[in-house]
Amino acid sequence: MKIIPTSHTAETTLLTLPCPVCFSLSDIFDCGQCFRFYPLNKEKTKYAGVACGRYLELEKRKNSLLLRTTQQEFDTVWRDYFDWDFDYQVCQEQFFFDPHLKDAVLSFPGIRILHQEHWETLCTFILSQNNNIPRIRSLLESICRTYGDPLEGNGRTVYSFPSAQRIACLSQQELYALKTGFRAKYLIDAAQRVACGDIDFQQIEGMSTEKAISELRRIKGVGLKVASCVLLFSFRKYDCFPIDVWMKRILNSYYPPGTDASYFGPYAGIAQQYLFHYERNNHGNMSL
DNA sequence: AAACAGGCCTAAA
DNA sequence: TTTAGGCCTGTT
Image (cartoon, rainbow, N blue to C red):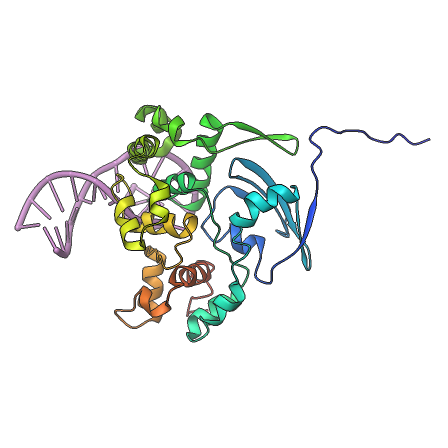
């Protein structure tokens, strides 16, 4: 007689979906747009993380994608988050006119631009300045652990990203204590403006890219690069073209002087992401 | 040990 | 209007 385990605690359904053509978990989560998902296995076919106030585990199989979630949650949250309905294959074809960009696309065809939460993305890229990726990750973790809400994450406790209201109540020293350094005052300014409605994400949604950038730049610590990242990674403003040191290097190395976003077309931001990730993984290095 | 890391702010011309 | 320092912290 067998004993059948009956652990019904936190019973979650497993949703299996046909996977879009362009969809790689490591490309998506490790291309520098998102810092709260981690691989669960060495092959990087399984990832877990927190977004939109929820914990998510997912696994890529050959032609399918397994998500530990319900169909309903997928429809209302994750479908949008993963930019599910945007056709990256069609988008990529528009990039093949440029040989270098084509190489980048073919090297990392599984990149997608996530549609992340506005407030969290704003904080993420404020924190990103003068920082490297491991440190951005650890800063986000300690902020969430300290001020976020606990969530059940498949037997472990994980933490959501704290709201703007929550951060707005903190003192600069409290954030400084989490090693955020000179960025602490920027986070406070951002939180206060968002919490009181001075910065209104709904309004920004409807603005032109140019207008949206200048609106976000009213926040202390938000310059052109940070604003561009926020708009690209959480507002789906695909024409936003963040230029950091890596992109500067790319433009200087492979493109004629004066080349800017307009060369790459209306989806320049997506092009930027392929190029950026390609260069960072050292494939763009001519000395190879 | 000094420089640098996915910038931005401020002060000075 | 443009340019040079400085900035928290951690890693190399």
